[in-house]
Structures are given as structure tokens and as C-alpha cells.
Image (tube, rainbow, N blue to C red; front, side, top):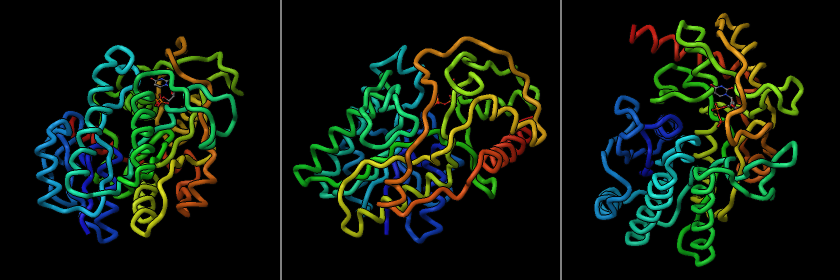
Length: 325
Ligand code: UDP
């Protein structure tokens, strides 16, 4: 069974393609390689194309006749979305509309969409469930929420069924070390902390005065392979006639920036860090209530703690850093 994966050359997309292939599906990657990596596409064909090219995406859908779409392709830097909001609405909302246009023309009516906990904004609860108000605080989160709304309206018209997966902080790397996190520029905590420990520049700890136990921000780090499995379970939910829905993917446990750094240290990487002011728009704490994913998708995170997650990330970065030195 063919599944078209937009953004299949990216971080979560490539891990999902690997798992799709292991489970007997044929992933067809559609990616413009603006941030993705050609060498991450190993489990099916790569079509280099842009989502805005409706004719091309429609032709690809006609040629391959995929049973469903898993849609990752997006611009995904929160900070950049604040400085260049148009890019985020154009790429994320505009690109998705073009894809949906192609799906409608070819009668492909199932999509798993990569949404985000950024749609919740600054929540007032400890554990975020799917009914919490969605009030994004940056254009990235807003663009994802707009797409959720479009998909909700199309589902009401019974045109296209969807599962929107709102993920928390994707982390770690493939346990076989074939693929991992590789962003240019890198802005995420875990890779930057590891790079610092491997001799690159010191890490800034953004905010030490949050209302959290140690004053640094708390996030729910979920392993990328667990995310990949969540996508396949969501796909199978739709294939077996399940209803459209919005589902969190997170572990239900949070770790602070300092906890991440001390765990990396326990694993032998001594990151150099210094305290810095808060980064604009960073909530104090974002932790998922995962009960809906467990109930609807029978999903559970296999990586149970931050140490397991970090050890896969360290293995990946050590391998890729030694290759580039
Ligand atoms: N963070 C930090 N220093 C960095 C990068 C991130 O202190 O150089 C903090 C950031 O403020 C947030 C957490 O680490 O509280 C996770 O940030 P990341 O960018 O990895 O993911 P986000 O939660 O922004 O999606």
C-alpha cells in the first residue's frame, strides 16, 4: 500500500518512512529539500517538488495513487515565524491548501497531519488535553491551527478525513543510527547542548526565573520513533474507518532545561552553559495529557525517560560529528 509522505526527507518524516517500510507500506516522499536531506530518503522513492505546485502534486497523486497522505512538509522555526510570518502562512497554510486541492481532484480522502502543541499557546494547566483552549502565541502555531480548522471543515463536509497529531518536543534519533536530527540552523535544546559538549559554542539557558521547580522551562520530550509509530497508528485508524480527530502525542512527563543538561552530563557529555534571559514566547511548561492517544490509537511511548531518549540523540550526533570532522 502506497502512502505519500510530504516532508519525508525531514526529521520526523524520515523516521516515519522507515517505520512505514518496516510495516509493509511503500512510502513515497514528496519534498522540496529546502530543509530536508536527500540522504534521509532510503525507504522509497523521492520526488523533489514543492507543495505550491498544485499541477505537479496532482500528477504525482494520479501516478502513484496513494491510499493516504502523511503531511509533514512545513516551515517549523518558531522564532523565524515571528520575524517572517508571511513565509509561515504561505508555506504552511498555502502549501496545505494546494495539497488538499490535489487530493480533492484525485479523490484521495485521508490525511494524517503534523500539527503541534504550539497551537495551545501558553496553557494554564499542568497537563494539556485536546479540549484545552487553542490560543497560539506565534505565527507558526497559528498556521498549524488554521490548517486544523480547514481540515475540520472539510471533514464536516465529508470530503477528507484527518487525524491531526499535536506533538510535543520531538527528540532523539533512530536506534540504528541511520537518521537523526539535522537542522540548519539548529535552534533546539538537545542538539545544541550535545554540540556544546562536543566542543562547539556554549549553550544559553533561556530563562531561569520560570515558575517551575528549578526555574528553567519544562517540556515534554517524546522520542521521534514513538512519534513515527503514532503516525502509523493514526493512518491505520483512518484506514479502518475511524473518525477524524485531534490527538496529542507526548509522554505525559516533563523535564526542565537543567534536567536535560544534567542527564546529558550523566551520559558523559559535559555541555558548557550560561544563564540567559527568556526567549520571547516561551511558555514555562508544556506537558501532554496522552490519554486520548492511548484510548483512540492504542499508542504508548516506548521510550519512558529522558535518559533513553538522550542516549539515542548523543549516539547520532557523535556519529555525524565524527564524520564531518
Ligand atoms: N532552550 C534553551 N537554550 C537553547 C535552546 C532552547 O534554553 O539554546 C530552551 C527553550 O527556551 C525551551 C526548551 O529549551 O524552554 C526547549 O526548546 P526547543 O527550542 O528545543 O523546543 P521548543 O519547546 O521551543 O519547541
